[in-house]
Amino acid sequence: MDITKLSKEVSYALRHAPWEYELELDNEGWVDIDQLLSALRIDEQWKSINESNLRKMIEVSDKKRHEIFDGKIRALYGHSVPQKVNKKVGIPPSILYHGTAKHLVERILSEGLRPMARQYVHLSVDIDTANLVGKRKDSSPVLLNVQAENASSEGVEFYQGNNVVWLAEFIPSKFISVE
Image (cartoon, rainbow, N blue to C red):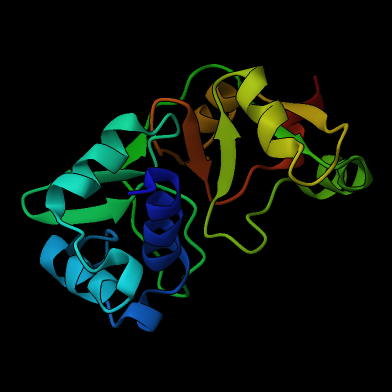
């Protein structure tokens, strides 16, 4: 079984188009594992998929996009579904990073960071991850430094996606500088 392909399929189902799989996400993005497995098995390539395949997918993933708990599975971040996926507020590290395309920098420094097609702005705890994310939009991305601790102390809410990814609904420009 191609674990990378499975991860992409599950991510698409849980982050972007649950209705295509006839899945109902709860307000925190959880869905019953059995419901997801039944939906995936309709496709011939996933006919023999089971819960242990999903657990292995999560275990070997370096990006930690999903989690399983109490018979349910969810994507931890990256949602673009219309229904807001609620997150618990956390205390971010002092500094977070965001990689972006050069042509967007002036606008971000003027207007702040917005989630665009996602539900949340995605921030990274390290420069390497921010750089990798930024390269999806620009071969030489600009790295932005986000004063997360200061923003948090002034009321910006941050949510932990996983060990590396933090989320926010909006980051005002006064907390952003070019790295």
